[in-house]
Image (cartoon, rainbow, N blue to C red; front, side, top):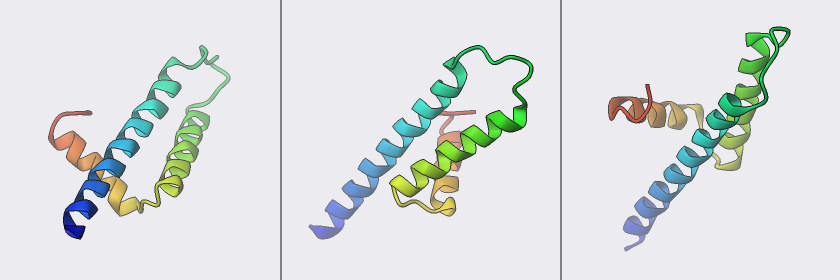
Length: 79
């Protein structure tokens, strides 16, 4: 039974991270209109900061996040 709970916990955390990741993307897309003065580097930096925060919050490694993103791309949930 503990293994089943562990798998359920992993799936729950995966869903929470997926939801948080999707929200972070929506925030970047629907944020106030960015002027041309805001560089792509700043946008990338904002996204990376948010992603790092989420990884720390959910105690996930870069490897785990990479696997999650690869899986989402494989199942065509993101492009």
